[in-house]
Picture 1 (tube, one colour):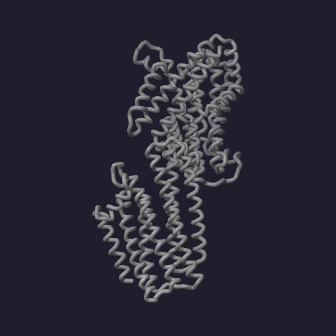
Picture 2 (cartoon, rainbow, N blue to C red; picture 1 turned 45 degrees about the horizontal axis):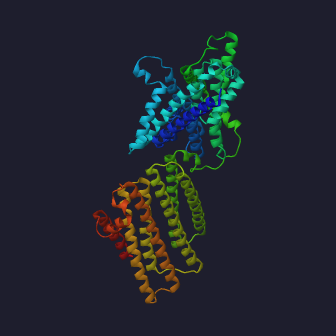
Picture 3 (spheres, helix red, strand yellow; picture 1 turned 180 degrees about the horizontal axis):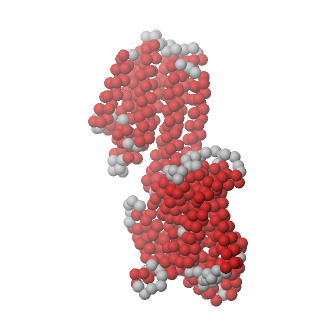
Length: 589
């Protein structure tokens, strides 16, 4: 075999691999994480798990991606180890779809329509259609659809090119002897596992085996151990991804490996033992693409059927053989970065947790003003430390996510999350400032006048309502909920300004000391700034919900200015309603 032929073969393999990667990436993006979210919400029904695992893997064409996702879900604490058994079994079935598609090359007919299904022709058609959608048609998921077609076209073109490049090997005795050695079951399984581990794709390695079948040297006794090994080799990525994860996440990856090894051992014993006794007629039969695809499919379905009744025993076996500590549950598992939509969903859940923690600290800080409690202060400081840690983790996680290929909508979401987590963290900081005022009042044995206490009570209730409305709009992402925050924030501003004026008058009249006055004004500033950040969060929600032609998107500052100058009757109505309620309470106080 000449250097030119070797180069052509390697180039064909590269095209096939790139096509597989492009197609899988496009399928994952087009699904926008919806398929993977189905896995997350599965019940403990193992049969449903097999079905969903097969469907999801069949659509995204990567059993490795499905298994790694299971590892991530278990590590994040949103799935149990028992739920992953069926999914992993189903994933092995779903990954056989590519081999079935590539078996179209065996079509032999004079019918022009059926001839178009042969890889050499179909690949070109799909690639042309794909590049048209990918480059020239915008909007929705059309670009991702084009990427899928382009990847599939390159997959078929690579397959056809490999067959052409390998044609000279048909007469090579060295090539025939090399493949004859793979009939040794141990060597065949090892080679199949190593090649698949190197390619990170059992579908791709089976595709290469299908291309090699065109040389006429691949018999059943050669293909069988190679396919067994390919199923084992595909477990490497999930094993690597479980490093540093929780114990159950490691067990999920180990479960994939043990399932495939167990199935391989059963089939090796049955088939090689049976052949020794009965000398199967098909043992040395030459395999074509379709036969290899069917062998791959039959093996994976049979393994599932045989081992499914023993799924509980498999889990117990994995729990017994997998050592290690429990590890830390991580919602921001970096495995989710491979699916940006899921990573964003996880990040948004953690931002929501930050908002809830900030709200808790604001409530504690207000309680400390009313009645100082050292244990509550300690809890506030612990929560604040957690908030700071969450901000750092989220910030780093979202920056890593920006290195991935994101859609415009996903990029906008990252920006919104970065701003929102900063707002929630700052709200927590101002809650700490309020608690520090409480500490000063307690340490110096100072106390506000009854009137000042009642004024603060009205303001803090207004701020707490603003925070509650903010978290509500962030939870629901409803336009009507987000619209309620800014009128409430404006009421807080008006209240704070009024209270400041009244307090300055008390200082002038000598009814309050400078020391108490300083603390009172400091509280007004911090409480007002909490509501300012509530306004920022609500505005970000409105921006997410608006179209790019709306004023809230194009010029947020102008939108806010118009709100406060009578441009929105809904805002005016809500503002008057909230203002009357709190100023009535203030007058009663």
